Amino acid sequence: MTQTASPLGTNFVTQIGVLVHDIEKTAEEFKKFLGVEPRFVLTEDFEFAQTQYKGSPTRARARLAFFNAGPNIEIELIQPDMEPSTWREDLNAKGECVHHIAFVIKGMNETIGRLAEMGMPLLQRG
Image (cartoon, rainbow, N blue to C red; front, top):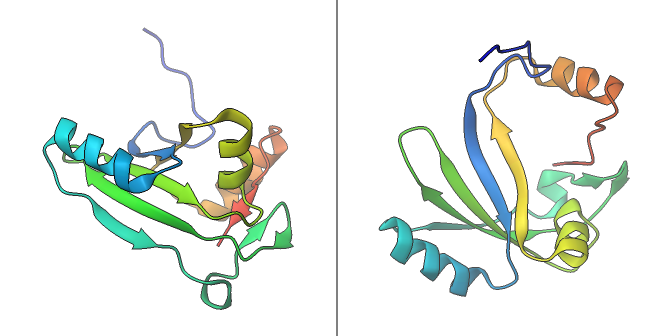
């Protein structure tokens, strides 16, 4: 199999994010399946995170559950609040689904610019 150069500069996947409606219920199912305890987190509030969605400030927050699924991969469950966010938009439009695949990269700003030039703009930060 021939490998071509990635705009990310890597193929090292570190996380898979999954949108869910009920984080408690889904985390319990993942716990049984993976045999590991989740670590729960609430994202930071706007004053700290300065979250932006499609270029505008948003007070969006989410409950997160993290599972170590191997030495280099983490599964993140995401239950968003009702504020505007990529999480909420995707959960409303598609239901529970994979939201993102995270890669280990170098040069975040350069990579964001390169992806934007390829028609993949940054939708949310913070």
